[in-house]
Image (tube, rainbow, N blue to C red; front, side, top):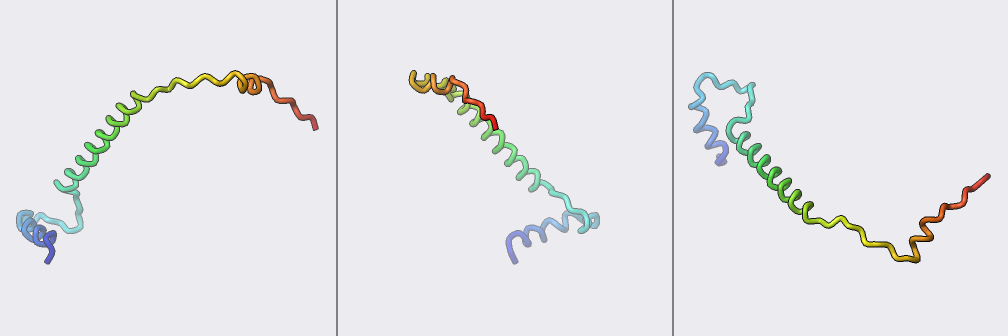
Length: 79
């Protein structure tokens, strides 16, 4: 018998006659798992926000030779 089955066998008498095997609820374990996931996501979002605030978005100036070539419009093709 596994530890999970042993724990379930201990908790089933506490439910009494009102336990319905057709009704499945997450219970306290589901809440704890969901809360842990929510806290983890919150921590990751806070960390990402902090790291994104440190990023410098200023672009380096282009060298003088390449700026003129990009500024000239491309000739149109007629065809």
